[in-house]
Length: 549
Image (cartoon, rainbow, N blue to C red; front, side, top):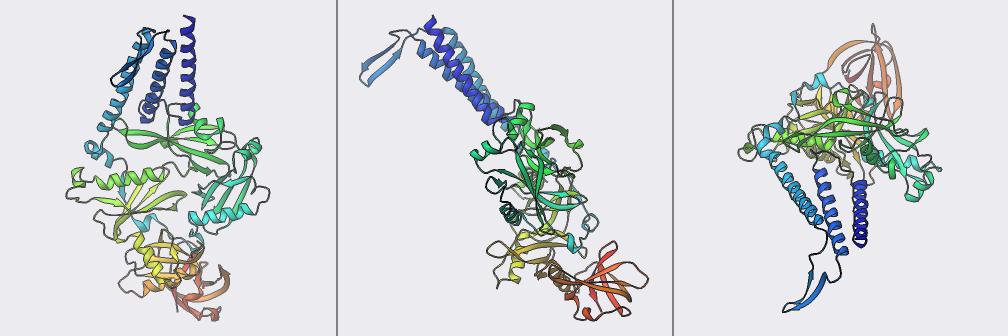
Protein backbone atom coordinates (compact mmCIF):
# COMPACT_ATOMS: atom_id res chain seq x y z
CA UNK A 1 0.00 0.00 0.00
CA UNK A 2 2.88 2.25 0.87
CA UNK A 3 4.41 1.77 -2.57
CA UNK A 4 1.15 2.89 -4.20
CA UNK A 5 0.74 5.98 -1.99
CA UNK A 6 4.13 7.47 -2.86
CA UNK A 7 3.45 7.83 -6.62
CA UNK A 8 0.10 9.43 -5.88
CA UNK A 9 1.68 12.00 -3.59
CA UNK A 10 4.54 12.65 -6.01
CA UNK A 11 2.25 13.11 -9.02
CA UNK A 12 -0.20 15.17 -6.97
CA UNK A 13 2.51 17.57 -5.81
CA UNK A 14 3.90 17.82 -9.34
CA UNK A 15 0.42 18.62 -10.70
CA UNK A 16 -0.07 21.36 -8.11
CA UNK A 17 3.32 22.87 -8.97
CA UNK A 18 2.57 22.85 -12.71
CA UNK A 19 -0.90 24.39 -12.24
CA UNK A 20 0.52 27.05 -9.90
CA UNK A 21 3.21 27.87 -12.47
CA UNK A 22 0.58 28.22 -15.21
CA UNK A 23 -1.46 30.55 -13.02
CA UNK A 24 1.68 32.54 -12.06
CA UNK A 25 2.50 33.29 -15.69
CA UNK A 26 -0.97 33.41 -17.30
CA UNK A 27 -2.77 35.20 -14.42
CA UNK A 28 -6.32 34.34 -15.55
CA UNK A 29 -9.25 35.97 -13.72
CA UNK A 30 -11.25 33.64 -11.50
CA UNK A 31 -14.41 34.78 -13.19
CA UNK A 32 -17.05 32.64 -14.90
CA UNK A 33 -17.61 35.43 -17.47
CA UNK A 34 -14.03 35.22 -18.72
CA UNK A 35 -13.01 32.87 -21.58
CA UNK A 36 -9.47 32.96 -20.14
CA UNK A 37 -10.78 31.30 -16.95
CA UNK A 38 -12.15 28.34 -18.91
CA UNK A 39 -8.93 28.01 -20.85
CA UNK A 40 -7.05 27.86 -17.55
CA UNK A 41 -9.59 25.39 -16.09
CA UNK A 42 -9.29 23.08 -19.09
CA UNK A 43 -5.49 23.22 -18.94
CA UNK A 44 -5.48 22.55 -15.17
CA UNK A 45 -7.81 19.57 -15.52
CA UNK A 46 -5.68 18.10 -18.30
CA UNK A 47 -2.65 18.41 -16.00
CA UNK A 48 -4.57 16.62 -13.21
CA UNK A 49 -5.68 13.86 -15.60
CA UNK A 50 -2.11 13.30 -16.71
CA UNK A 51 -1.03 13.19 -13.05
CA UNK A 52 -3.73 10.61 -12.24
CA UNK A 53 -2.75 8.39 -15.15
CA UNK A 54 0.94 8.75 -14.27
CA UNK A 55 0.23 7.81 -10.65
CA UNK A 56 -1.81 4.82 -11.75
CA UNK A 57 0.93 3.66 -14.08
CA UNK A 58 3.59 3.99 -11.39
CA UNK A 59 1.47 2.16 -8.81
CA UNK A 60 0.63 -0.87 -11.00
CA UNK A 61 1.88 -4.12 -9.55
CA UNK A 62 4.34 -6.56 -11.07
CA UNK A 63 2.94 -8.31 -14.08
CA UNK A 64 0.36 -5.64 -14.64
CA UNK A 65 2.22 -4.54 -17.74
CA UNK A 66 2.97 -7.18 -20.35
CA UNK A 67 4.20 -7.25 -23.91
CA UNK A 68 2.92 -9.78 -26.42
CA UNK A 69 3.71 -10.31 -30.04
CA UNK A 70 0.88 -9.98 -32.56
CA UNK A 71 0.65 -10.03 -36.33
CA UNK A 72 0.85 -6.24 -36.21
CA UNK A 73 3.87 -6.07 -33.92
CA UNK A 74 4.32 -5.90 -30.12
CA UNK A 75 1.33 -4.82 -28.01
CA UNK A 76 1.56 -3.45 -24.50
CA UNK A 77 -1.28 -4.43 -22.18
CA UNK A 78 -1.96 -3.17 -18.68
CA UNK A 79 -3.59 -5.09 -15.92
CA UNK A 80 -6.73 -4.02 -14.17
CA UNK A 81 -5.09 -3.50 -10.84
CA UNK A 82 -4.86 -0.04 -9.36
CA UNK A 83 -7.13 2.23 -7.37
CA UNK A 84 -10.67 2.39 -8.74
CA UNK A 85 -11.30 5.92 -7.40
CA UNK A 86 -8.82 7.24 -9.94
CA UNK A 87 -10.89 6.01 -12.86
CA UNK A 88 -13.99 7.66 -11.46
CA UNK A 89 -12.20 10.99 -10.86
CA UNK A 90 -10.72 10.87 -14.34
CA UNK A 91 -14.16 10.40 -15.88
CA UNK A 92 -15.53 13.37 -13.96
CA UNK A 93 -12.64 15.56 -15.06
CA UNK A 94 -12.99 14.51 -18.69
CA UNK A 95 -16.66 15.41 -18.42
CA UNK A 96 -15.77 18.85 -16.96
CA UNK A 97 -13.23 19.48 -19.73
CA UNK A 98 -15.72 18.57 -22.44
CA UNK A 99 -18.41 20.63 -20.69
CA UNK A 100 -16.10 23.67 -20.59
CA UNK A 101 -15.36 23.33 -24.30
CA UNK A 102 -19.07 23.09 -25.06
CA UNK A 103 -19.76 26.11 -22.84
CA UNK A 104 -17.12 28.12 -24.73
CA UNK A 105 -18.78 27.24 -28.00
CA UNK A 106 -22.29 28.02 -26.72
CA UNK A 107 -21.07 31.30 -25.21
CA UNK A 108 -19.56 32.28 -28.54
CA UNK A 109 -22.80 31.51 -30.36
CA UNK A 110 -25.04 33.42 -27.94
CA UNK A 111 -22.63 36.39 -28.05
CA UNK A 112 -22.34 36.40 -31.85
CA UNK A 113 -22.97 39.60 -33.76
CA UNK A 114 -25.53 37.92 -36.02
CA UNK A 115 -27.91 37.59 -33.05
CA UNK A 116 -26.98 40.82 -31.27
CA UNK A 117 -26.30 43.44 -33.95
CA UNK A 118 -28.50 46.04 -32.23
CA UNK A 119 -26.72 45.57 -28.90
CA UNK A 120 -23.30 45.88 -30.51
CA UNK A 121 -24.41 49.12 -32.17
CA UNK A 122 -25.45 50.56 -28.79
CA UNK A 123 -22.11 49.95 -27.06
CA UNK A 124 -21.09 53.47 -28.05
CA UNK A 125 -23.58 56.32 -28.45
CA UNK A 126 -22.91 58.97 -31.09
CA UNK A 127 -24.34 62.45 -30.65
CA UNK A 128 -24.41 65.12 -33.33
CA UNK A 129 -21.93 67.87 -32.52
CA UNK A 130 -21.18 71.40 -33.70
CA UNK A 131 -17.53 71.62 -34.69
CA UNK A 132 -17.11 75.37 -34.19
CA UNK A 133 -18.90 75.26 -30.82
CA UNK A 134 -17.10 72.19 -29.47
CA UNK A 135 -13.56 72.77 -30.79
CA UNK A 136 -11.94 76.06 -29.90
CA UNK A 137 -9.41 77.59 -32.24
CA UNK A 138 -5.89 77.21 -30.88
CA UNK A 139 -3.28 79.91 -31.01
CA UNK A 140 -0.10 78.96 -32.81
CA UNK A 141 1.78 78.36 -29.55
CA UNK A 142 -0.77 75.69 -28.52
CA UNK A 143 -0.66 73.38 -31.53
CA UNK A 144 0.96 70.03 -30.74
CA UNK A 145 3.66 69.18 -33.28
CA UNK A 146 5.14 66.07 -31.65
CA UNK A 147 3.83 62.66 -32.67
CA UNK A 148 4.81 59.40 -30.99
CA UNK A 149 7.79 58.68 -33.25
CA UNK A 150 9.22 62.14 -32.68
CA UNK A 151 8.63 61.82 -28.94
CA UNK A 152 10.60 58.56 -28.96
CA UNK A 153 13.55 60.26 -30.64
CA UNK A 154 13.44 63.18 -28.21
CA UNK A 155 13.23 60.82 -25.25
CA UNK A 156 16.18 58.73 -26.42
CA UNK A 157 18.25 61.87 -26.90
CA UNK A 158 17.40 63.08 -23.39
CA UNK A 159 18.29 59.76 -21.78
CA UNK A 160 21.56 59.73 -23.70
CA UNK A 161 22.51 62.97 -21.95
CA UNK A 162 22.18 61.30 -18.52
CA UNK A 163 25.45 59.41 -18.05
CA UNK A 164 24.36 58.00 -14.68
CA UNK A 165 21.23 56.41 -16.13
CA UNK A 166 21.91 55.49 -19.74
CA UNK A 167 24.04 52.45 -18.85
CA UNK A 168 21.43 50.96 -16.52
CA UNK A 169 18.04 51.92 -17.94
CA UNK A 170 16.13 52.08 -21.20
CA UNK A 171 12.90 53.83 -22.16
CA UNK A 172 9.57 52.00 -22.22
CA UNK A 173 7.97 52.88 -25.60
CA UNK A 174 4.52 53.80 -24.21
CA UNK A 175 4.59 57.60 -24.63
CA UNK A 176 1.00 58.00 -23.44
CA UNK A 177 -0.59 61.28 -24.54
CA UNK A 178 -2.23 63.08 -21.63
CA UNK A 179 -3.02 66.62 -20.50
CA UNK A 180 -0.66 67.94 -17.85
CA UNK A 181 -0.82 71.51 -16.63
CA UNK A 182 -3.44 72.20 -19.33
CA UNK A 183 -0.92 71.21 -22.01
CA UNK A 184 -0.71 68.11 -24.20
CA UNK A 185 2.31 66.01 -23.22
CA UNK A 186 3.55 62.47 -23.74
CA UNK A 187 4.89 60.52 -20.77
CA UNK A 188 6.68 57.20 -20.47
CA UNK A 189 8.70 55.47 -17.72
CA UNK A 190 12.23 54.15 -17.80
CA UNK A 191 12.76 50.41 -17.47
CA UNK A 192 15.70 48.25 -16.41
CA UNK A 193 18.15 47.54 -19.20
CA UNK A 194 18.12 43.75 -18.63
CA UNK A 195 17.59 41.12 -15.94
CA UNK A 196 21.05 41.65 -14.40
CA UNK A 197 20.45 45.41 -14.14
CA UNK A 198 17.11 44.63 -12.51
CA UNK A 199 18.95 42.60 -9.86
CA UNK A 200 21.34 45.47 -9.12
CA UNK A 201 18.79 48.34 -9.22
CA UNK A 202 15.42 46.89 -8.16
CA UNK A 203 16.00 47.76 -4.51
CA UNK A 204 15.77 51.47 -5.28
CA UNK A 205 13.35 51.15 -8.19
CA UNK A 206 13.20 53.03 -11.50
CA UNK A 207 14.37 56.58 -10.70
CA UNK A 208 12.71 58.68 -13.43
CA UNK A 209 10.27 59.04 -16.29
CA UNK A 210 10.29 61.06 -19.52
CA UNK A 211 7.86 63.93 -20.22
CA UNK A 212 7.71 65.48 -23.71
CA UNK A 213 5.85 68.76 -24.32
CA UNK A 214 4.01 68.19 -27.60
CA UNK A 215 3.90 71.90 -28.43
CA UNK A 216 7.39 73.14 -27.61
CA UNK A 217 9.20 69.77 -27.96
CA UNK A 218 10.82 70.42 -24.57
CA UNK A 219 11.84 67.05 -23.13
CA UNK A 220 12.25 66.57 -19.40
CA UNK A 221 13.65 63.62 -17.50
CA UNK A 222 11.71 63.80 -14.24
CA UNK A 223 13.70 62.36 -11.37
CA UNK A 224 11.71 60.95 -8.45
CA UNK A 225 12.56 61.19 -4.76
CA UNK A 226 11.70 57.51 -4.49
CA UNK A 227 11.94 55.09 -7.42
CA UNK A 228 9.04 53.36 -9.20
CA UNK A 229 8.77 49.74 -8.07
CA UNK A 230 5.65 48.58 -9.92
CA UNK A 231 5.42 48.22 -13.69
CA UNK A 232 4.37 45.72 -16.38
CA UNK A 233 8.05 44.96 -17.01
CA UNK A 234 8.84 44.25 -13.35
CA UNK A 235 9.46 40.73 -12.10
CA UNK A 236 8.08 38.53 -9.35
CA UNK A 237 5.46 40.11 -7.08
CA UNK A 238 6.12 43.66 -8.29
CA UNK A 239 5.05 42.84 -11.83
CA UNK A 240 2.02 45.09 -12.30
CA UNK A 241 -0.36 42.46 -13.70
CA UNK A 242 0.61 39.95 -10.98
CA UNK A 243 0.38 42.62 -8.27
CA UNK A 244 -3.15 43.54 -9.38
CA UNK A 245 -4.28 39.94 -9.97
CA UNK A 246 -3.44 38.81 -6.44
CA UNK A 247 -5.45 41.74 -5.03
CA UNK A 248 -8.32 41.63 -7.53
CA UNK A 249 -8.53 37.91 -8.45
CA UNK A 250 -11.92 38.10 -10.19
CA UNK A 251 -11.39 41.26 -12.27
CA UNK A 252 -10.91 40.93 -16.03
CA UNK A 253 -8.02 43.27 -16.81
CA UNK A 254 -7.31 45.38 -19.88
CA UNK A 255 -3.99 46.89 -20.97
CA UNK A 256 -2.44 49.32 -18.48
CA UNK A 257 -1.46 52.88 -19.43
CA UNK A 258 1.10 55.14 -17.76
CA UNK A 259 -0.07 58.55 -16.51
CA UNK A 260 0.95 61.25 -14.06
CA UNK A 261 -1.31 63.35 -11.87
CA UNK A 262 -1.11 67.15 -11.61
CA UNK A 263 1.70 66.86 -9.03
CA UNK A 264 3.73 64.66 -11.37
CA UNK A 265 3.21 61.45 -9.37
CA UNK A 266 3.34 58.40 -11.69
CA UNK A 267 0.43 55.96 -11.81
CA UNK A 268 -0.61 52.90 -13.77
CA UNK A 269 -4.22 52.99 -14.96
CA UNK A 270 -5.59 49.52 -15.71
CA UNK A 271 -9.16 49.24 -17.06
CA UNK A 272 -11.35 46.40 -15.83
CA UNK A 273 -13.41 44.69 -18.51
CA UNK A 274 -17.06 43.72 -18.54
CA UNK A 275 -18.85 41.75 -21.27
CA UNK A 276 -22.20 43.36 -21.95
CA UNK A 277 -23.59 41.07 -24.67
CA UNK A 278 -24.40 37.39 -24.28
CA UNK A 279 -21.85 35.56 -22.15
CA UNK A 280 -18.60 37.11 -23.40
CA UNK A 281 -19.47 39.46 -26.20
CA UNK A 282 -19.43 43.25 -26.34
CA UNK A 283 -16.26 44.02 -24.40
CA UNK A 284 -16.50 47.30 -22.48
CA UNK A 285 -14.91 49.03 -19.49
CA UNK A 286 -16.61 48.90 -16.10
CA UNK A 287 -13.94 50.74 -14.09
CA UNK A 288 -10.22 51.17 -13.49
CA UNK A 289 -7.63 50.01 -10.99
CA UNK A 290 -5.22 52.84 -10.23
CA UNK A 291 -1.81 51.83 -8.85
CA UNK A 292 0.78 54.29 -7.56
CA UNK A 293 3.92 53.25 -9.45
CA UNK A 294 6.14 54.22 -6.50
CA UNK A 295 4.31 52.95 -3.41
CA UNK A 296 1.99 50.32 -4.87
CA UNK A 297 -1.03 51.98 -3.27
CA UNK A 298 -4.06 50.87 -5.25
CA UNK A 299 -7.73 51.79 -5.63
CA UNK A 300 -10.63 50.61 -7.76
CA UNK A 301 -12.94 53.21 -9.33
CA UNK A 302 -16.15 52.63 -11.23
CA UNK A 303 -16.27 54.45 -14.57
CA UNK A 304 -18.47 57.25 -13.20
CA UNK A 305 -16.13 57.85 -10.25
CA UNK A 306 -12.78 58.08 -12.06
CA UNK A 307 -10.77 61.14 -10.90
CA UNK A 308 -10.82 64.11 -13.27
CA UNK A 309 -7.07 64.11 -13.90
CA UNK A 310 -7.13 60.58 -15.35
CA UNK A 311 -7.17 60.86 -19.16
CA UNK A 312 -7.07 57.26 -20.41
CA UNK A 313 -9.84 54.95 -19.20
CA UNK A 314 -10.82 53.42 -22.54
CA UNK A 315 -8.25 51.79 -24.80
CA UNK A 316 -7.73 52.87 -28.41
CA UNK A 317 -8.49 49.46 -29.92
CA UNK A 318 -11.67 49.05 -27.86
CA UNK A 319 -13.00 52.48 -28.91
CA UNK A 320 -12.17 51.88 -32.57
CA UNK A 321 -13.87 48.45 -32.44
CA UNK A 322 -17.03 49.91 -30.91
CA UNK A 323 -17.09 52.71 -33.48
CA UNK A 324 -16.86 50.12 -36.26
CA UNK A 325 -19.72 48.11 -34.73
CA UNK A 326 -21.78 51.28 -34.44
CA UNK A 327 -21.18 52.21 -38.07
CA UNK A 328 -21.64 48.67 -39.35
CA UNK A 329 -24.96 47.80 -37.70
CA UNK A 330 -26.92 51.03 -38.10
CA UNK A 331 -29.61 49.10 -39.98
CA UNK A 332 -29.06 45.58 -38.68
CA UNK A 333 -26.77 42.64 -39.33
CA UNK A 334 -27.89 41.59 -42.81
CA UNK A 335 -27.81 45.16 -44.12
CA UNK A 336 -24.14 45.33 -43.23
CA UNK A 337 -23.48 42.72 -45.92
CA UNK A 338 -26.37 43.14 -48.36
CA UNK A 339 -27.43 46.60 -49.44
CA UNK A 340 -25.15 48.32 -46.90
CA UNK A 341 -27.49 51.31 -46.51
CA UNK A 342 -25.90 53.82 -44.15
CA UNK A 343 -23.00 51.49 -43.29
CA UNK A 344 -19.85 53.31 -42.16
CA UNK A 345 -16.42 52.35 -40.91
CA UNK A 346 -13.56 54.15 -39.26
CA UNK A 347 -10.61 55.25 -41.39
CA UNK A 348 -7.20 53.64 -41.23
CA UNK A 349 -5.81 55.69 -38.36
CA UNK A 350 -6.55 57.95 -35.44
CA UNK A 351 -5.02 60.75 -33.43
CA UNK A 352 -5.75 62.72 -30.27
CA UNK A 353 -6.73 66.28 -29.48
CA UNK A 354 -7.05 68.07 -26.14
CA UNK A 355 -10.45 69.60 -25.37
CA UNK A 356 -11.25 71.16 -21.99
CA UNK A 357 -8.49 69.24 -20.17
CA UNK A 358 -9.61 65.89 -21.58
CA UNK A 359 -8.00 63.76 -24.26
CA UNK A 360 -10.23 62.91 -27.23
CA UNK A 361 -9.60 60.28 -29.87
CA UNK A 362 -10.20 61.58 -33.37
CA UNK A 363 -10.91 59.42 -36.40
CA UNK A 364 -12.78 59.84 -39.66
CA UNK A 365 -15.88 57.90 -40.68
CA UNK A 366 -16.13 56.78 -44.28
CA UNK A 367 -18.38 54.65 -46.44
CA UNK A 368 -17.65 50.94 -46.72
CA UNK A 369 -17.71 51.29 -50.49
CA UNK A 370 -14.04 52.27 -50.34
CA UNK A 371 -14.07 55.79 -51.77
CA UNK A 372 -11.43 58.32 -50.74
CA UNK A 373 -13.66 60.65 -48.76
CA UNK A 374 -15.10 60.93 -45.27
CA UNK A 375 -18.74 61.57 -44.48
CA UNK A 376 -17.68 63.07 -41.17
CA UNK A 377 -15.55 62.38 -38.14
CA UNK A 378 -15.94 61.51 -34.47
CA UNK A 379 -14.36 62.69 -31.25
CA UNK A 380 -14.40 60.26 -28.33
CA UNK A 381 -13.58 61.33 -24.78
CA UNK A 382 -11.07 58.71 -23.60
CA UNK A 383 -12.15 59.14 -19.96
CA UNK A 384 -15.95 59.10 -20.30
CA UNK A 385 -16.48 57.63 -23.81
CA UNK A 386 -18.71 60.58 -24.66
CA UNK A 387 -18.83 60.54 -28.47
CA UNK A 388 -19.64 63.36 -30.87
CA UNK A 389 -20.18 62.90 -34.59
CA UNK A 390 -19.57 65.84 -36.92
CA UNK A 391 -21.08 65.73 -40.39
CA UNK A 392 -18.29 67.29 -42.43
CA UNK A 393 -17.85 65.63 -45.83
CA UNK A 394 -14.25 65.86 -46.89
CA UNK A 395 -11.01 64.15 -47.69
CA UNK A 396 -9.94 60.99 -45.95
CA UNK A 397 -6.81 61.44 -43.86
CA UNK A 398 -4.58 59.52 -46.26
CA UNK A 399 -5.74 61.72 -49.14
CA UNK A 400 -4.92 64.83 -47.11
CA UNK A 401 -1.49 63.40 -46.28
CA UNK A 402 -0.76 62.79 -49.96
CA UNK A 403 -1.94 66.32 -50.78
CA UNK A 404 0.46 67.81 -48.23
CA UNK A 405 3.32 65.65 -49.49
CA UNK A 406 2.54 66.77 -53.04
CA UNK A 407 3.28 70.36 -52.07
CA UNK A 408 6.86 69.39 -51.19
CA UNK A 409 7.34 66.40 -53.48
CA UNK A 410 10.68 67.75 -54.67
CA UNK A 411 11.95 67.35 -51.09
CA UNK A 412 10.58 63.84 -50.57
CA UNK A 413 9.10 64.58 -47.13
CA UNK A 414 6.56 62.20 -45.59
CA UNK A 415 3.52 63.33 -43.62
CA UNK A 416 2.55 62.28 -40.11
CA UNK A 417 -1.04 61.20 -39.48
CA UNK A 418 -3.17 64.38 -39.31
CA UNK A 419 -4.37 66.19 -36.24
CA UNK A 420 -7.80 67.83 -36.51
CA UNK A 421 -7.89 71.57 -35.71
CA UNK A 422 -10.23 74.51 -35.94
CA UNK A 423 -8.61 77.14 -38.14
CA UNK A 424 -10.72 80.18 -38.99
CA UNK A 425 -13.68 78.03 -37.87
CA UNK A 426 -13.03 75.48 -40.58
CA UNK A 427 -12.15 71.84 -39.88
CA UNK A 428 -8.50 71.61 -40.85
CA UNK A 429 -5.92 68.84 -40.88
CA UNK A 430 -2.54 69.70 -39.40
CA UNK A 431 0.49 67.50 -39.96
CA UNK A 432 4.25 67.52 -39.70
CA UNK A 433 6.43 66.74 -42.72
CA UNK A 434 9.50 64.60 -42.03
CA UNK A 435 12.61 63.77 -43.97
CA UNK A 436 13.98 60.27 -44.51
CA UNK A 437 15.70 60.38 -41.11
CA UNK A 438 12.37 60.99 -39.36
CA UNK A 439 13.18 64.62 -38.48
CA UNK A 440 10.44 67.25 -38.73
CA UNK A 441 11.35 69.75 -41.44
CA UNK A 442 8.07 71.47 -42.31
CA UNK A 443 4.40 71.72 -41.34
CA UNK A 444 1.21 71.65 -43.35
CA UNK A 445 -2.44 72.69 -42.98
CA UNK A 446 -4.98 71.01 -45.27
CA UNK A 447 -8.65 71.94 -45.53
CA UNK A 448 -10.86 68.94 -44.66
CA UNK A 449 -13.61 69.75 -47.16
CA UNK A 450 -11.31 70.83 -50.01
CA UNK A 451 -8.03 69.04 -49.59
CA UNK A 452 -6.42 70.81 -52.54
CA UNK A 453 -6.23 73.90 -50.29
CA UNK A 454 -2.86 73.44 -48.59
CA UNK A 455 -0.52 75.70 -46.69
CA UNK A 456 3.05 74.65 -45.90
CA UNK A 457 5.93 76.32 -44.12
CA UNK A 458 9.09 75.72 -42.14
CA UNK A 459 7.28 76.93 -38.99
CA UNK A 460 3.72 76.44 -37.79
CA UNK A 461 3.07 80.17 -38.13
CA UNK A 462 4.38 80.27 -41.67
CA UNK A 463 2.31 77.23 -42.68
CA UNK A 464 -0.84 78.71 -41.17
CA UNK A 465 -0.32 82.02 -42.95
CA UNK A 466 0.12 80.15 -46.22
CA UNK A 467 -3.07 78.18 -45.54
CA UNK A 468 -5.10 81.31 -44.69
CA UNK A 469 -3.92 82.89 -47.93
CA UNK A 470 -5.04 79.79 -49.84
CA UNK A 471 -8.47 79.96 -48.20
CA UNK A 472 -8.89 83.62 -49.02
CA UNK A 473 -8.01 82.94 -52.63
CA UNK A 474 -11.17 80.80 -52.89
CA UNK A 475 -14.22 83.04 -52.95
CA UNK A 476 -16.65 80.20 -52.32
CA UNK A 477 -14.81 78.96 -49.20
CA UNK A 478 -16.28 80.71 -46.15
CA UNK A 479 -13.87 81.50 -43.33
CA UNK A 480 -14.86 82.85 -39.96
CA UNK A 481 -13.23 86.21 -39.43
CA UNK A 482 -13.97 89.70 -38.16
CA UNK A 483 -12.94 93.01 -39.72
CA UNK A 484 -11.72 96.11 -37.93
CA UNK A 485 -10.00 99.37 -38.74
CA UNK A 486 -8.07 101.53 -36.34
CA UNK A 487 -4.94 103.46 -35.45
CA UNK A 488 -1.93 101.62 -34.03
CA UNK A 489 -0.99 102.81 -30.55
CA UNK A 490 2.03 100.51 -30.06
CA UNK A 491 3.76 97.81 -32.08
CA UNK A 492 6.56 95.34 -31.26
CA UNK A 493 8.20 92.43 -33.05
CA UNK A 494 9.61 89.16 -31.80
CA UNK A 495 11.22 86.10 -33.40
CA UNK A 496 9.64 82.78 -32.46
CA UNK A 497 10.65 79.45 -34.04
CA UNK A 498 12.73 81.45 -36.53
CA UNK A 499 9.67 83.40 -37.63
CA UNK A 500 9.11 87.13 -37.05
CA UNK A 501 5.76 88.13 -35.55
CA UNK A 502 4.38 91.61 -34.98
CA UNK A 503 2.30 92.42 -31.91
CA UNK A 504 0.28 95.62 -31.92
CA UNK A 505 -2.70 97.32 -30.28
CA UNK A 506 -5.27 99.68 -31.73
CA UNK A 507 -6.54 102.90 -30.27
CA UNK A 508 -9.18 102.41 -27.57
CA UNK A 509 -8.55 98.68 -27.10
CA UNK A 510 -6.28 96.52 -24.96
CA UNK A 511 -6.52 93.55 -27.36
CA UNK A 512 -3.23 92.36 -28.84
CA UNK A 513 -3.22 91.50 -32.55
CA UNK A 514 -0.58 89.05 -33.76
CA UNK A 515 0.57 89.11 -37.39
CA UNK A 516 3.27 86.91 -38.98
CA UNK A 517 5.72 88.56 -41.37
CA UNK A 518 4.33 86.47 -44.25
CA UNK A 519 1.10 88.49 -44.27
CA UNK A 520 2.65 91.65 -45.67
CA UNK A 521 6.03 93.06 -46.65
CA UNK A 522 4.94 96.37 -45.12
CA UNK A 523 4.72 95.04 -41.55
CA UNK A 524 8.33 96.03 -40.70
CA UNK A 525 7.52 99.64 -41.60
CA UNK A 526 4.40 100.03 -39.47
CA UNK A 527 4.62 102.39 -36.50
CA UNK A 528 2.41 103.96 -33.88
CA UNK A 529 -0.07 106.37 -35.47
CA UNK A 530 -0.51 104.38 -38.71
CA UNK A 531 -4.05 103.42 -39.70
CA UNK A 532 -4.69 99.77 -40.62
CA UNK A 533 -7.60 97.62 -41.79
CA UNK A 534 -7.39 93.99 -40.83
CA UNK A 535 -9.33 90.76 -40.48
CA UNK A 536 -8.73 88.47 -37.53
CA UNK A 537 -9.96 85.29 -35.86
CA UNK A 538 -9.82 83.80 -32.39
CA UNK A 539 -11.06 84.69 -28.93
CA UNK A 540 -9.69 86.40 -25.84
CA UNK A 541 -7.16 89.20 -25.54
CA UNK A 542 -4.79 87.83 -28.20
CA UNK A 543 -6.13 87.50 -31.75
CA UNK A 544 -4.55 86.16 -34.93
CA UNK A 545 -4.43 88.55 -37.87
CA UNK A 546 -5.55 86.97 -41.16
CA UNK A 547 -5.11 89.94 -43.50
CA UNK A 548 -3.81 93.47 -43.03
CA UNK A 549 -3.84 96.59 -45.19
